[in-house]
Length: 404
Image 1 (cartoon, helix red, strand yellow):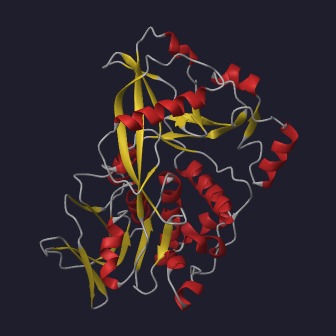
Image 2: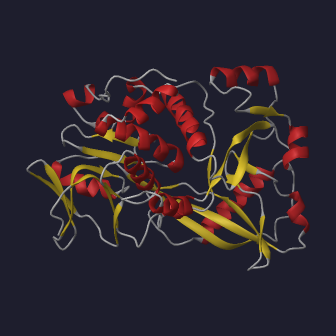
Image 3: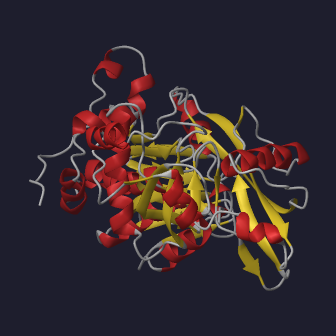
């Protein structure tokens, strides 16, 4: 039973919890991390082929601006962690390629030529093996989230970890938060608690009358196997493709002695079934056909040899929940990351320390990419609360340093 309290307790060791743990340890704060699994990144964050690229919306909305700023943080923080570098965001089939109009749109969205480059269908065919126009993002890529979570925990000096224990209740005594498991055993004492445990955050907050309106969205990725001498190998994309679905380039597996081609993913709302489904593989096969269009390929030889199933945690407005719960002092949440786990986790690793401990380092990074309180209010969990609290949901940051 812990007698002394720590500064920060993080519940959940997925990509959100792991990035936050690294940040608080860098600030020199006594930090603890608890997870129900045997180690970090064991559930949805076990994803070995997650991709991240800049957002391309219709307008420069608040969401777009926040996501673009978060992408800049991702590029700086994880530049040595990419598995594959570069993402080609393909246009819809038969879409016209008006280079002037598209270039003006990217500029309006804050995406300059150094970040996103317009590619014609002919150039895309030569460079990527895809006969479709689109935008090439050289600084984007894919990351093995599970491996990243493990490395972040291992590289966080002084981090106190508790594995295979579930926090089922929190309560406050004498200004300190206590975390208990299902047996009623005290796991940790902390001044500040951050709930980065997806749906588990709602369970811990329900006794306080706080509702986050979270829902599950099941996602299944399919890995198709191809023989080493398959002619189809040379007709598949040579880079990461994103659009209606996404895929990674085929990679040869020396153990299975075949090529593995990852394609995904399904988006099954209000579905929390974690076992693979044949119908989901069929859905991803249709995604693969759409990605390759207008090229017609015989894909009868594509058969699933592996799958990855994860549960996305989302809110009713699809934005993440990142920030403080004012009615519960020193409680913060980082959840509802949806399909942008690395993007929103990286942003949360600066927003929450800036709020909880006035981190000058975090404030400087946020300011540098134009991420001020007005924008970040869109992510505050108080946006769903009724009454006066909802009308005062703007995060309270200390005075921001000038961007450098």
